[in-house]
View 1 (cartoon, rainbow, N blue to C red):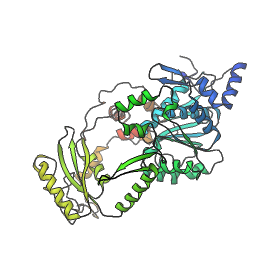
View 2: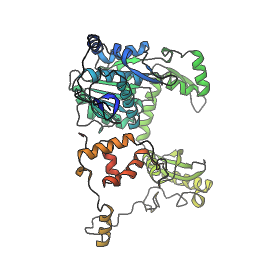
View 3: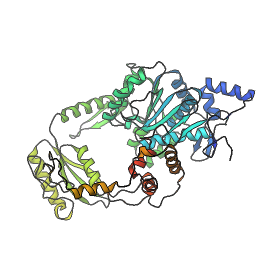
View 4: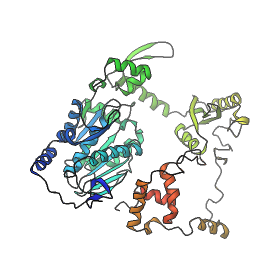
Length: 493
């Protein structure tokens, strides 16, 4: 094994490895540093679905994107699906980390797994760079990396807590239109001051449109030059190989509505036809539709609404009828406590008594009281009732131990102590043990527990199986090992 490899990986150079540059390599290094497009076209490699690992042959709009990222601080991009948008941004982020010292970069997506996948693409491109162009590696895992020039890259889900407390030179927000509004607003109020305080810090937002949300507002204002973002729009026909024949085939295999959203990227000026319940039709643009939807949402959220919904099991049988005043909260409660199911809204009303009667009628219609998951015939409503909840606990009852001190017996206290008996806190582990855990996680190919159905009806994930399998070896809890792997603790090791 060569001494210049990072943790035995022949594609990575470890820190403090001396390199003798040839004259041509020096010229190439300088040229790449000055021109990120040249760097991407000549040194970045990507995985093609048809041909495997190939050089990044950039389209014209991808070159334009990278130039905009390089020349402007704030960029917002509205692009169709599968157009190479994420790969383009990743190539620029790699260039920025390589040729700038002591910079911090955050890759954030609507899901943490998506962010880690983007970091994985960047790491693949890095591994295929020539060794003389690489910086030595200090940290390399699924969630982050650090190079010997001091540059760091983090991958996480988009949330206010994801990058709180850190200072970042570039924040990349992938598929930002799919981040819920309340999370997007919290994120910007928490993170934007950090970005705006620098003179060269950058914010890159890339997404396919997804309704009226924070992304829509940023894009809408950028088009009208009401903010400092540089808007870039790419049409599906700009991607080579996509023509009218491809469009027709895609619509046949999906739907026209899906094609409009995912590939046409319908915007504020796009005209659509709407049909009212009375049969009347009207042509309006998307901006007007969003405005009407927004007004409708405000009006209805100022009213007290009651919702009737049902749960279907995986065999498509209706098993539960319920009523609620908060759909999202109730949906989350069912997801945590019921077997796998489908949640669908049936009716809604402003009248409490009508909601009670609707619940009774639907429970009777589908017989979910005796042959389903309902614990009562329904109709209790929300007015001082004693109702069996999802977990079998009476709603509205006061916990038996509220306000009582020393309420557990010595026997119970001893049982609770024994749960963690012999276990150690992860902070007592050594740096070497932390590194061993993370390396073992990266190198363990197969685990027999992966896919096992757990008590909550869900399949055990890879990280859950790994922690259950190996936590005993280090005498820590599975949750403690998971926090180590995800770098929620021991971040500097």
